[in-house]
Length: 326
Image 1 (cartoon, one colour):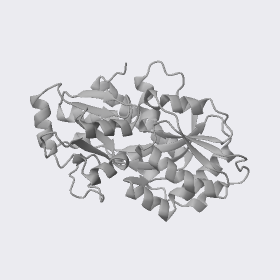
Image 2: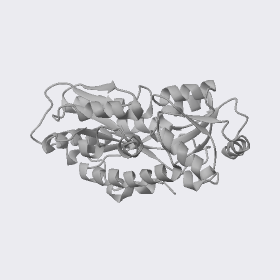
Image 3: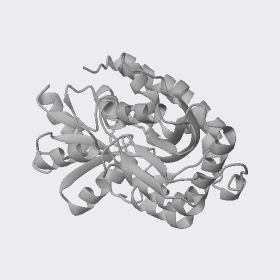
Image 4: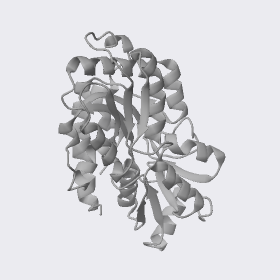
């Protein structure tokens, strides 16, 4: 199966980042600080983007937007916390590919359906993943890594931000495309998985670019490939999956802001306006780009359609890869 950024669709990619389109939505202003829940630990890509956006949104909404990390169960704990919060606009969540479109197909005991229990506000970012390995691993290219893994089936391992996270699923896609037998080691977030990759407790990771770029630039891990359709301007020397002969491993991750279902439309419109204002700000765009993320806003309606298409896509990967969680 080929997963590419084409899946973003015209509904999202054609949307200009024009904050004035919704920033003037009348009828609601927050009356107290807002909680912006990130269902993963601090330091990961989702957390990095949320903190950049929260800073700008605080100014435009006239109330502090406080990032709160609630971790565990592949992001489900933080998501459930928001699901059970008052639908009054004062609680938001930075949802992700995994929490919205993967976990419902992996966790049979989930107490909520994110597509029914949450309401969309706006897309926020897309980002590529990078194939990184421990520096002691005796490989210099992705092709050498594939050859090593095939010669030692079951002996190599990869870390992820948790079962069902994008860093898990993109790695599973890589396994399918390259026909590899490598072991999954889930962590409670990207940062600890990355730390163990650096330490050599796991040999590799397909981390999101924003959370890995600092360690790549510091030279503490080796980067072998990128999952996007083109090379990154931050890592112009790193080949794409297509360039290493694995076009079926091409993929991207994304994040979107959601609120509890039942949040009134005027409230969502105001939050959408604040997000579009942040994403349309040149400084915010530069900060996200420097971290390896592409700013991407949307209407709530376009986000709803996109979540549906992504759910179809990743459910097929789970089924074909026979992926389960304990």
